[in-house]
Amino acid sequence: MYFRFFKGDLTQEPLKSLEANWRELREERDKLLQVIFNDIPFNDGWVGSEESIFGIVVNADNPELETLKTIKGYKIEPYKERFKITADKRYKAGKVLDKMIKAIREILHKHPSFSRYAIKQLGLDCWIFTNEGRAFFSVCGVENSVFLVEIPQKEQGDKGDEFPQIPDYLTEIKESEFLALQGK
Image (cartoon, rainbow, N blue to C red; front, side, top):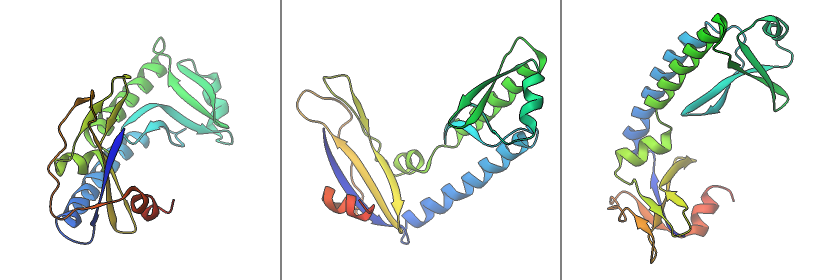
């Protein structure tokens, strides 16, 4: 798979406004999540990603853990030296937890990661599907106020999107510079 790499100055427009808007949306998201997490006394985080949730994490030293073990409605599994709590919907407590997890999942889906948000806003979304059945897509991030983008490009036999129009505030760079900017 062939990729092209670009950089831009995050302190300059329109990238500066793009990041500021995303930060406002992230604050909004965090407030919505906090309302739900305030009602989960055993919450030490969640299993998932910025955009999805599969369960609630409880630290092994959380005093609520022993109480949780006695309540029907919670499935408790070891998870990376901690515990993952999921809902057993056969019981009232599990049904309540399931509703909370679904509400959290909905909020996370409505508030994408910076990469997904920026790629969409800038019109740089590009998906490529290879003959081997693999999929590649555009991603971006920030390192020391440098906005970095990696976009896949179709090769012979690949299917997917045409390469997007690159705005003039982004400069194409070599992969070596792309990696160096990330400290690799």
